Length: 430
Image (cartoon, rainbow, N blue to C red; front, side):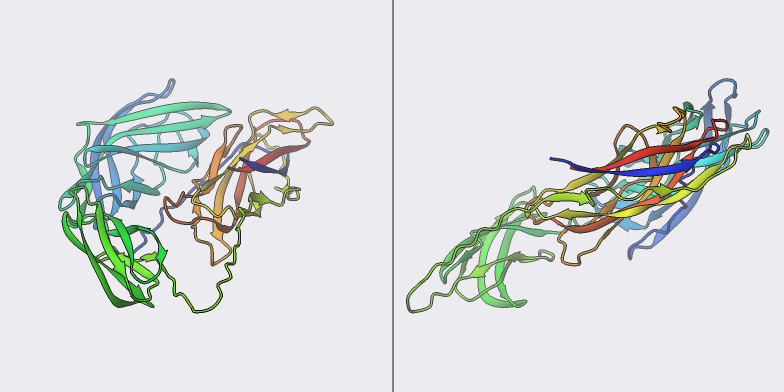
């Protein structure tokens, strides 16, 4: 199921320049970060008529000092001046794709688009950017080195893409940085209760994940305090734990001991003397919707005057609401597409014009069980671009209320008919 609404974007005639740049952001969290600069011998192959180049290129990498196996951690990458020295002047929109060898795995970090003024005789110097890498599973108690395996730059110019490929020599490079992986495995969690309610004397099977192999115990709690009801079980070599407990005392949570919060909810049923009158209620699923359904008003990016040079115009997409009232465990994705820039009255068009978004996403209802993940900045085209998402919950409840918007920037060709043009950007949720 998908729901869409349309938003109009109005732009005046102008010139070429789409720039959705993302500055290097600081690493978040409590773990400290380490920065290291490493010279890497690079051999580059650039598209004609641009010659390739070989030489040392400094890579400055910022990584957390430590992490757990399986963690997704932030990384900041700042490539220094490239061995490629251009012989001509041009303005392009560049995207860097840095493939790293993280332990034994290859992972690629992609930069946001960057508008670059290429100057003859001046080495290309990509801007720093941030992203994430995953610490490989099974690396507990080791140090994971991060090395450079490949650097690819896509330069967009007037609707065409020119790719420069740079290979480290040797490949992969020496270590650009490292992360100490904690000896402990992933945090143990309680995953399920079967059943999750009952009267005094109810036997409950409790399951969990990421536990050390061997014996485990489980316990019931009321308002955060142990009730005294406990059980025993075992965990397999794969970390899957099963524990059986008989619940005799009023309890609202059950856990496998050693698990991290949150514990699993339990409903203790107390029978009262008298006439029983069952009360049934059915909770129906609500919609997954994005709105307003009628669309937002046109976003005015202003006007520019043709001068034969590259220019950019910026604006702000009006925020839209996302509501997930399905009452399940599903996630969602919001994506954006657009139509070409046209004037349907005069028949004029700008086939090479581009528009990009630097999206934002936030939770507007604090009771929402789901978090909102913002997408990477990028160009909107007829191919859906993911701008925001919420992950599926597995066994956990998902849903909530959110607000999605973002900054926009239009890149226009250097020459076109002086006219007013319109593109329709459509945001869809599924």
